[in-house]
Length: 157
Image (tube, rainbow, N blue to C red; front, side, top):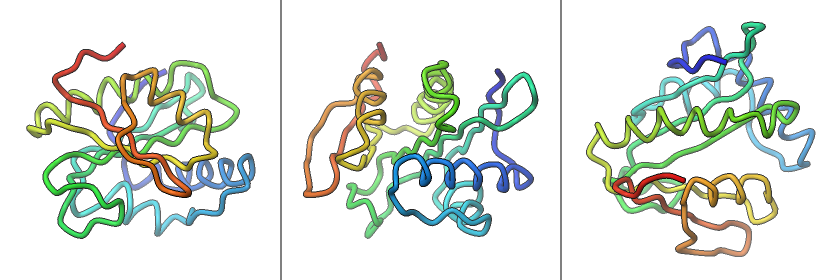
């Protein structure tokens, strides 16, 4: 597996991953190519969007890191990082998320972030376990979501 910066040409494969996640979880989410481009690949506050590519040259996951700006939809304090991780359901538990996070963590440190935030759907148990394994800790809960934070100066597990 290789991790590299996402490119415009990856948007279709990234869209397929979001659609596969929707099919597997039943959670509706935007997933068209235009959404992928504007939200991940070309986000105006984007720091890095990485893709994990299999030995068969297929995108099997991606992770985005953006700078929290005032009024962001995740209700995260401005100045820190916001992360989103999306792995093909058929590729879980293969180290993809850990490989993506190693790159995102380095980018967060280079960007001067002290914290990285993740907002996870309350019922997304795989994502909750993933972020816990990376030393993200719960700091806020909502009816439908759990907010976790990673202190960039903390060593990841």
